[in-house]
Image (cartoon, rainbow, N blue to C red):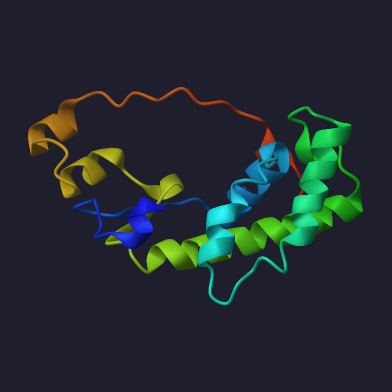
Length: 150
């Protein structure tokens, strides 16, 4: 909230974008965060909060009924449709918002981290090219196997 009412605290704003289908798949598997919508709803023009009531209700219902990280693998087709529409709206709205302030954008699936290191001057050219890339702790949910298109 402080950032919204103050000068930018960052020298460079980099937008990290995931492929929309990858984003949708992950959100069906783990998208149980109602609170995540707050900032996007507050800042969107035109406001999207009228369209997010159904998705909030679907997520809250899932939390109440099955509080497990099972997502789209257990929801009925009507709920999946509501969630997909909501998550698509979220992806488009968030990316439009951040794009307006980002200095650059890259898609995580198609980025050479060594080149990005050099571009953002996170180290010398030599250190960016010679330091081993280490993967941060991450998890796989098998979402890439979920059918999200018909």
